[in-house]
Image 1 (cartoon, rainbow, N blue to C red):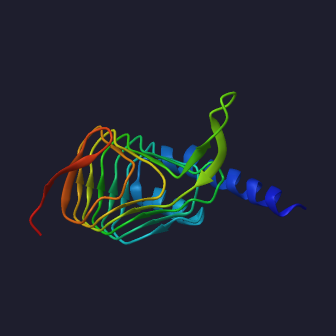
Image 2 (spheres, one colour):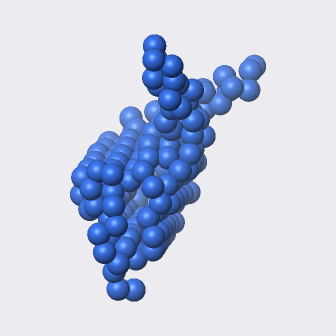
Length: 173
């Protein structure tokens, strides 16, 4: 059987397990066990609320992190990875987009798909309704204000806000 076809079948089964079964369960501990079965690497004392959507299992979540309801991680079967550090809090309805497109010709501006990783540093706080685009690193101890669009790297211990997110101020360590 074609290697890509096997990958797609495995990805479909993992997404089904994560999004149709685990995401609907009322108990975080059981959800985490099912997420681990699907391939997520989840540290100790991680809490992932219900109704989180994962299109990939190529995700690592550090100890004590929290992911709120209605968050989404999309990779378009392109292999992008999401790294969430220790003690990170992710607000509700955050979108981590691990895939995008090159700019195409005028007949179809969404050209060839491209993948990228997202890294969220230890201790950061991602506010509600934030969108994080591929190939972005959010430094340790950052705050990204609600409603922001993160399309560039964020320095450690700084606050960012806006569309696109801009440096607001440095934070105390």
